[in-house]
Length: 92
Image 1: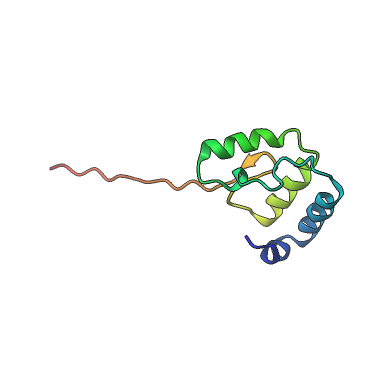
Image 2: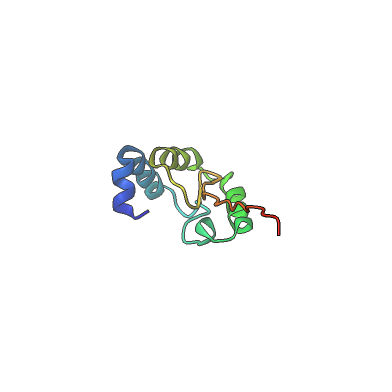
C-alpha cells in the first residue's frame, strides 16, 4: 500500500503512526529493513519476533487493523494473506 492510499484507508491511525515514528530515534526494528515485507514466511516470522521489543507495537497494530493491511508484518503479526491451493482428485 502506498503512503497516500494508507493515509486514506485509515487517516487517524496513519497520522498517529507517522507522528510516533518521527519521535523515536533508531529504536524501531523495522526501519530501513526489508524483512517485514519479505516473500518468505520464515523471514517474516523472524521480523514479527523482533517487533515485541518495539515501543510502537500497539500503534503499528492499530494502524494495520484500521487499514486492513494484508501484506507484511505489522504490530508483531504477519498479516500476509496466504493463498491456498485445492487439488481436485479424479480417478484415472
